[in-house]
Each structure stands twice: as structure tokens, then as C-alpha cells.
Length: 410
Image (cartoon, rainbow, N blue to C red; front, top):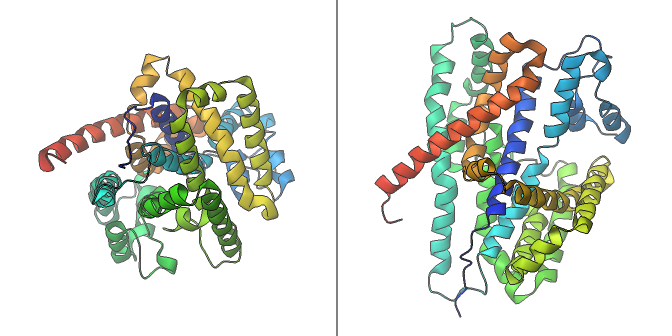
């Protein structure tokens, strides 16, 4: 029996992907503003910057809770900055949602184990093309500007170009070969555990998702032949061991094996949920839109972030807050689908948006900083979001034109 494929495209799933991409864009905007020095506050205690700085650099619950007070006593600019921090400072958690819904969507499209000869080879070709071709397009498009900034602007000392050039020079001055190898192979055989070096640090996710796709058929076989309990139990054990190795320094963050070893249980959970949802879409949709589902989702997000604060419970945190965030994202996407603008925006390719946005964040933050000063973080967020969505739209048009022109029939 062949594996039946789902023919219904879920609009809410496209909307959820777009919302996750926007959260990641906002998070990287905050990090760019932090790097540009836009969080400094002369009226605050030493080291007191913003929520996004505190959350990513503190190890105790009290330090994080203290920053939730927002430093609003020191003026409107600080309050606006930390408001954006509340909205986007946890945006890195959207990557975890991406992992879960990747397993969900891949599993949703399949019924039984495919018996068609050569099915998985064709599946690999489709999935790797979907991930790798846009990446090489985007990476190639940034190669010339980066090299121009590195070599052509070496004597350009007019702000803000001097600071941009310094960042680029620090990146490529002694690492050009490693960068070329990393962008070509997605791993660096000379680096620690093969972790690649990218122009945009967010691109670490590309080799990680490739690894997950390569493992998917084997995980799907376990799911169909051994059951959900075996798949979830095995991946949970792998994840818990990997987190211990990560804390001991044997593994590193944001490496090509991130999903395979550190978060395989999230990917597997998405696969299991995809099969469940496929079997009863209407019932699941109705259940997830109930007030009880909203309450459960909020509690999971709260509990997961509390677990995030403490080293012993940290390995469990993503398994708790990610399902909660996914439910909240599902409900929000389902609600926003009533708006024509959101339906149009959610057709923007979220993967393309993920690839494109980060290299622009720091230059835009620097440039706007000269115009808006300490209000850049707040007012620049909307402009940066519009810019990246617009650029993604243009890139997707060019990419699909090129795909039809150079790869007809694929």
C-alpha cells in the first residue's frame, strides 16, 4: 500500500510559520540594536540594559524577573525599548516551534509507510532542493557586498560604514577559506565538531534542518512500525543525554547536529502530532480553539520558561514551552486568517524570510541610530520588518522565476 499524501494545504500552518519567522526577525533586530549600543542607559544601575540582554545572559530566576520590571523609571525611550524586548526577547523560542512544526508538516503529508520504489530518493531530492537552493542563492547574493565591505571599504571611515566594515573585517579577515567551505558544504571540517561559520549566524539552522530531513525517513519507519511511544522514548533519551554532554562541553550549541541530538524529541513530537492531526483534523481544530486549550497553552509557556531559568530543569524546558507556544500560534494564526492582509502576508515564504533578514539588521540599526537615537529599537522594528518582508517577496519572485527557467519540470 502506498503512503497516501494529504492534498489539503493548511492556511493556519502557513500563518503559524510566518508568525514564527516574524518573532525571529524581531529577536535578531533586538540583538542588532544591542550590538549597535542602543540599549545603553545612563540612568540605570551598572550593567542594567534590557530584558533581551538579561534573559540571554543571566543564570538565576531573580535576575531575569528583575528585568521584567522594564527599567521604566528612566524615561520613555527605555520603556519603549523594553516593550519591544518583551515582544521579541523570547523570539529564539520560535526556532523550537519551527522544529516541532517541521516534523508535524512532514508527517502530516504521509499516511502509511510508502511502498513505492524509489519514493524516499525522490523525497530527499524535493526536500533538499527546497532547503539548499534558496540558501545558495541568498548566500551568493551576500558574497559580493561582504567582500566589497571587506576590501573596497577598508579605508572608508565615514560613520556608520566604519563600524559595519569593522564587523565584516572581523568576520572574514582571517577566515575566508573557512567561510567558503562552510557555505559550500554546510560544515567546516577544520572547526570544532564541524560547526560551520556563516555570514549570518542565524544560518546555523540550515545544516541542522538538513540533518533532520535526512533522519526523517528512519524516524518515520520507527513511528509506523514500532509506535509513537518507542519513537518519543528513544528521542527523549537521546535529547537528555545530549543536554548533559552540552553542559559538560562535549557538544556545542547551534551545530549541524542540533536537531538530531539536542532536540530530536521535539521533531519526533511534531511527527506524532502530525499523524494524529491527519486522522482527525476537524476534531483537533475544534479542541485547540477551546478556552481549555488556551489555558493549557498559557500554563505550558509559563512553566517552560520557569524551567528555563534553572540548570537542572533546563533540558526539559523546550519540551514544555514549545507545545504551548505552538497552540498559541495556531490560535493566533487561525484568528488572523480572517484578515485579508495577513492571508496575503502568510503566503510570503517563511524560510526565505529566515534566510534573508539577519544580514540587514546591524547596518539598518546603525543607520537608524543616527536618526532616531535611543528610539531606534522601537520605531525601527516596524521599518525593519517591512523591509525584510519586502525583500523576501522580491527574492521569492526572482527565485521562483529562476527555478522555472533553469529547472523546468522539477
